[in-house]
Structure formats: structure tokens, C-alpha cells
Image (cartoon, rainbow, N blue to C red; front, side):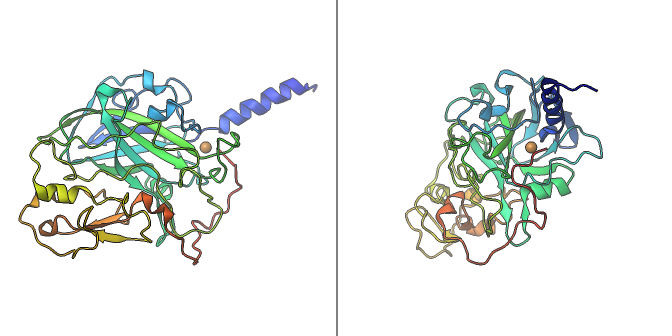
Length: 348
Ligand SMILES: [Cu+2]
């Protein structure tokens, strides 16, 4: 058989595309009702499971081409309720492997008002799960083990209305290289958007951030060497919004005190820290309050290692490990993420 060089290239290219299939958001399950792609998950115009690597691309907003598509409905979801998101690799068959096991990395979920179509300083993070050193598990390990499913709790106090719900996995298997320096490698972002109609009596409008804009190609956690030894992973992006952290109008001083337990003023903190307010980080942590309204009531179920909430009567006290602890010195004790050694750059 005569095989020309050109047809060999074409064959290689077609084989590459056949295996060049990564992961995509396949379903949402809200209060026992399942919704598929196209219903409240935005349909994907092309390459639905392809990664985005250029963090400055508008594809970072909702996935490849999906800023211009629209779901057929905004699926109803109560503020404070659990939404199960479900990823798949190629299809939703029982044998689907969800995402290749080389694609280790964090999972995050953001929301923005649907009316913005994701443009402007509108995105707030509601969930993140990175790397758990105690178990050696990445979020990606967990979703593979859980057949693609991840439970997300919507903030209990956000204002009712239509929102984009943006899911994001960062696969780190080529993230040891800055994409801006070498576009053949770099972190791979798997991003999809769903449309939900949030009900409830809340009035909170969390501070928003722009996407693209929240990451650069060298942001710690976007640039990360999965093949080194590490004991922690700096999840990129803003802190997770915790219900009670802002109020849409009825703002008491104690609520404001609870609002600002963030890392911006504590970037040099070495590991976990406990604080009662932005300006009073060293204060005694056990003071009482009679105002329970500020209690952070929605700890994401899979983010237990990120922070712990205290009983409601200690509403303003909690401990957090923030994404901005990336400045923290890493421990000298090596912990390997996985026993599976993968070839850097391998992609499926
Ligand atoms: Cu891939």
C-alpha cells in the first residue's frame, strides 16, 4: 500500500483528534431532576470537551464558543440547595472514564448574573477543591471515583434571579510550563456554563471578578509542577464567597465583621490562621455574638479541608486556608500526589 507523507499526516491528525477528548459538563441534577446539555447546560458549538489554555481568551468565560450559545431554559434551584454537577469524557455511558487520570487538578464553580452574559466584574466563586495532602487526592481523583459527580451548595443568601453557573477543572499535566512562553504546553482549563434560576429571599450580591482576567499564565496554581513533590496546591482565583459575607441592605456591624476573613492582608501567613475580622487578626477568637445572621452556613461539602465552620453562636469565627496562601513556604516533607506516574504532556 502506498502511503504518502501527506496522507500519513492526515491519519495521524485524525487519530490525534480521536483521543484528543478530555472532559465536559454533561448533566446537572437539582432536587432530583436531571438536566442534560442543551437544557440548562449551554450547548457546545464545537469541541465540547476541548481545553482552553490561553487564559486571556473570551473562551475562558463559558468554554469554547459558548458565550454565544444559550440553554433552552434556566433550571430552577433554591438558594442554599445542593446542585450536583456531572462531567464526562466522551459520553455519558456507564463505562465512560470521566477524565483521563493524568489530568489531575482542582475543580471550581463560579456564578454570575445571567444578564451579564459573563462580561465584566461579575463572577464570584462558590466552590473550590484542590489538593488534599492528607489523602493525596485531587478534586479530579474524587470526581473520577464518583462517576463524574460533584455536589455544590449554592450560597444561601444570594439574591434571587437568573445566573450563569460556571464549572472549571484545571488539568495540570502540562502546567509546569508557562503557556505564554510555550503554547504547546500549559495548564488546560475545562470550562462549561449552565443557566440556573435561583429562588429564595436572599439579597446578597457578592463582589464579582472578571473572567477572563482572574488568572494569568503565571498565577500560582495555573503554573504548577505536578511532577515535583508538594504538600499543598494554591487554588487560583478569588476566595470562595461564603453566605453571610455580604448583605444586600440590612447590614449590621457584626455582619460586616464577618465579611472580611480573607487573605489579602495575610498573604504572608505561613499556613492556616484564624481571624475574627480584617483589622483584628490577632484578637481573641472566642468572643460571642447574639447575631447569628452572619453565620457562614454553606460550607461546600467537598471543601472540608479548605476551612471549618464553627457553631452558629461563634458565627464570626472561622478558620480558613485561602488560595492566597500560595506565598506560604512549602513543607520539606514530600508527599506525592499519586502513585501513577504519567508522561508529562500526555493527553487524551
Ligand atoms: Cu486532555
